[in-house]
Length: 245
Ligand SMILES: Cc1cc2nc3c(=O)[nH]c(=O)nc-3n(C[C@H](O)[C@H](O)[C@H](O)COP(=O)(O)O)c2cc1C
Image (cartoon, rainbow, N blue to C red; front, side, top):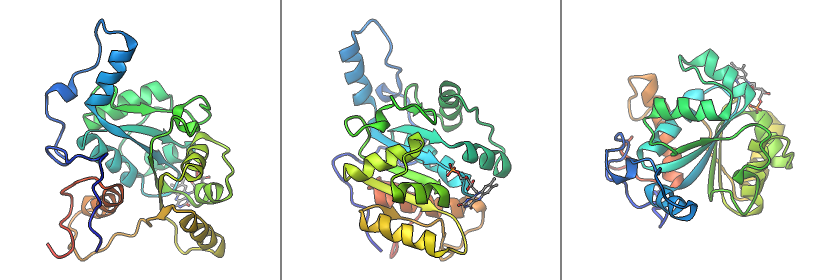
């Protein structure tokens, strides 16, 4: 099994998946500073942002847990949640999330124990958001869970909403794009789109947890997939032992 590639973006965090400890990283960057030094402080506070999009496939827990894990590893997290994903979250979890981006950021910040400013959310058609452009988008994006609808839209470059556009930007800029589809069985359309995306450099990481770690709780199955995503992102974690450990 492949080792996680840790890159310069991912200095090992002090406590993988522990709650962020108090300290300079957790202080809100407010105060009588000019914009430039405030931005520099913000950048110093967190690891570079990872974009996480939740779409309307079953498995909202994977996406919510991924956000928690990225927060714990001190990454800034930029979040988009599709309309269908909100419905799935309501159906599958006890989590109640507002739709409006500012309120959504506040709710996710509270539930994941994020520091102020660590989570930013964007609306479905916020074309002015940084993720909509190659000059502003983070170098890494995960669509988790990924509906077959969004999978198809990304494979064909539809860009009809900000999630699809951000993925399109990731592909055109040759950045890291991971899609976590959940559907079964798969049609030829799904499989062809997965192959197309893989050939373009995206990673298809199906929400298909293994059982060799003897999971006892649903959370163990969720962590199996989230650990695989973190491995792909090169982010240190202790969610699951690596193969052979
Ligand atoms: C409770 C629920 C579960 C769903 N599960 C799946 C699923 O596992 N995979 C999938 O591709 N679509 C699933 N769908 C259908 C998608 O939500 C639907 O195709 C939607 O248009 C996707 O939109 P989005 O990609 O913009 O989020 C589900 C819908 C609901 C309401």
